[in-house]
Image 1 (cartoon, helix red, strand yellow):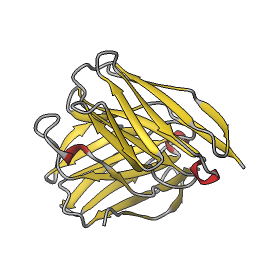
Image 2 (tube, chains in turn blue, green):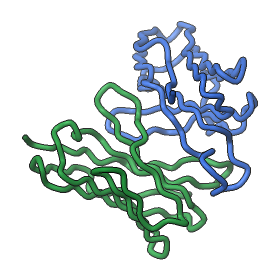
Image 3 (spheres, one colour):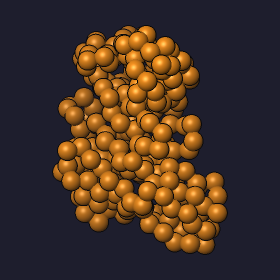
Image 4 (cartoon, chains in turn brown, green):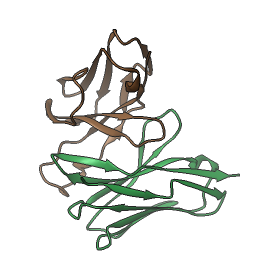
Length: 120
Length: 113
């Protein structure tokens, strides 16, 4: 089973709202990722969690707040978003965050279906 | 910073023909290269990957080749079918401020029946 699930599938929110995106995997993966994808563009990395600790933050604005409550769950809390934040938000997971490159399948990332977010 | 260039941006082929997508990476230390297929309204799906200790890998109609010296890698799809129509992303795994996957810009493949 290589499934990553995300909820909700679609979300419409105003600029003053607070909402959360959720991601779940039951593959025993210890690294989880948030990506943002605009139309006709590749995914852009936002955050990486390794063993439930934030290991990479790609200079994402503070209106995006990630949380990893346990090894299976990843949340992205949204507050005071701007219309330009409208995008597909993808969650991914991998076996682990590798300590050095080329040591095995740890790097293989499995993506969820995404949450399509529209900020009005 | 590190980047991955992908060509062409759009590719249209007749059903049954082959399709080739090419990528070039900049980080000579990269040694893991996945390919993802993304259909409309879905997340990227891993279709094949290759590591730098291997020059070629094949899985049914899909093959990937890697030239480490030239820092090139390519995806080959043979006997294309309409359901192969999607956006394909190449990627390179790198270490710049942390281990991460750098994606190419994507290739939109149309397979005409």
